[in-house]
Image 1 (cartoon, rainbow, N blue to C red):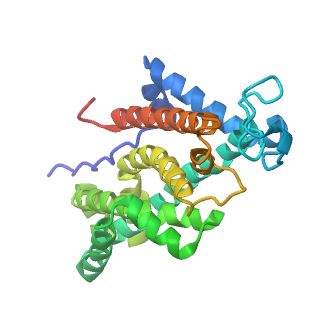
Image 2: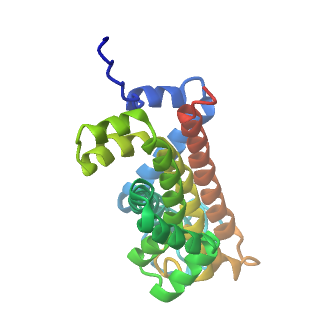
Length: 290
């Protein structure tokens, strides 16, 4: 009787190969990566490259037009708009990176737990996910932000809670599919412990949709933070963020339109760049497109 052949595990895409597939022959992705990198460098070096203190007021420079002294003009309090945009990029980019990562960790944990163990655990987690998904992301974020307030970590928590249900649903569905694979059944039959099966076999093989979702929702996190700040329940003034720069400019738009224009342009450029990268990552990891 012939010896049974070992069932090969699916090979996870290597990071270098994935990076090559994402950028190969795609100038838009290369430009988007460069754009995000430039904004990240600006955010990191904000204390050294900002020409002025972003919260310093000057009554003699109120609503100044762009000039050699103020490259993007000033707001209704005489604060340098360029400096506020530079410092505001720190909040917006941090929220856009931290929140999807935390949401991916929490959502993957819930989804894998529900999908792998099933039974009452699956029913409880699924009901919680369905309850949270009944609220649109923005409405859920507004409700949580109104309860917690607008501090830095409160905003991170708000965005994390808003995105966790989506990650949990994707992780659960992927886990249910992977759980039926022969290599999982072989591992269970050979006595491999449950934590080892989950972390060595299940999580790596459901990582592709999680990575795609995390990349795409980084752009959504930036938009959502800007919306919360615009509504007054996100980053609190006088600390700058792109959202509250637009909000403060809205009440002064007839005196100077530059806060609205520059803040909106910054959000548009970064969100478009991250969305382009996310689409490229999705295409690279989608076997049907290949």
